[in-house]
Amino acid sequence: MPEKHPATVTDKRPGYGQLLRTRGAWTFLLPGFAARQPFAMLTISTVLLLQHTTGSYGTAGAVSATTGVSMALCAPLTGKLADRFGQRAVLVPGVLLHAASVLALTLLALAGAPLWTLFVAAVPTGASTPQIGPMVRARWGVKLHGSPLMTTAAAFESVTDEFTFVLGPLFATALCTGVHPAAGLITEASLTLIGGLLFAAQRGTQPQPSRSAGAGHARVEHDDAHARVEHVSALRVPGVRVLIAAFLGIGAVFGGMQVSMAAFTQSIGEPGLNGVLYGTFAAGNMLSGVAVGAVAWKITPQRRLLFAYTALALTASCLWAAPSAPVLGATGLLVGTCIAPTLITGFTLVEGLVPATSRTEAFTWLTGSIALGQATAILVAGQLQDRLWDGAGFLVPMGGTVLALLVVAALRSRLVPPPVGRTVARGLNHRVTLTVD
Image (tube, rainbow, N blue to C red; front, top):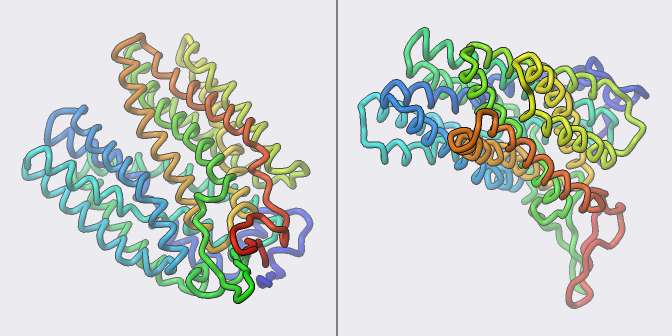
């Protein structure tokens, strides 16, 4: 049985103070915070550097989108390898490759290299982006297995992510505009390298690789002759596929609002308001995330996800009709307030749905889904803005969340974990797959 730490399971009402007193938590939280900052700096730093060297926002956006799609496609593989061989074994070569790829992209841009070389360099840059957030969440799962503090930890990570996505772009913009256009990418690579290596050095808190017998849930196959532990891909869990659809919709909100708010403020002659409006949206997300983590919930996470996603779809559907900046800001605040409960509940569900041996992979599928949804929404919203009317890009958050809500509502039964010790699959030769502790 997993070890239960008294500091994490004794109090009836979980809280942030109790969470942060978890033994060994700060050893991975501090380097993890430094290493995850670059995640939010990469896109904007790439855009600002390439707009400076090519003079085209279209080119800069296309190369930046390439990094986002590459990251989304490769993140689950990174998580799967981390579950199988250990986070350190994947993270060390990953951060080295990422730093080298970012440096290559920077040098090619500054040298005025052909456009195709920028796209070539963008692929490994995005693909090697370290998945620090999912790895931190997996470490919380090890520390807090079976504890009511898991919801608090999920909320804490959501708030940390939001803080990262507020601070990262501001830091990158200041570096690119106040120091040098390449300063953002160079800083991103440096933080990734230093923070990633420090995080990888914390071996004591990383989940045990699934290639050896470990604690937590594992898939065990029994037949007449033997029993053996087998790694199970997170994508084979039906509930994970439902959450992927839900998180694609959340990515559509992020991407659609980024483009549409910028276009809206440009159309009214107040481009400086874009930062204020998007900051208001992010603030709603952070504040509601803090509140969700402080509540001792009585209803199941499955119902919470359905309620939160319904509220998100309703508020996102009102964005396109906002007639003025103040109304858009207020609506964006409401949308942000609904996102955090959805994200937190989705990440919380992973602990019950996915074996411990596949948890990092599951988290990377979800974060990768957000990135893919965001990259797709940016492209679609931009096309709608150019081809239709001002504000048409806000149809993307509405469409993305409504479609995802239909999936969640129709398949919500798949979000219920199978009972421990019950048969969950059968095959030939009377082989039975069980979920055991």
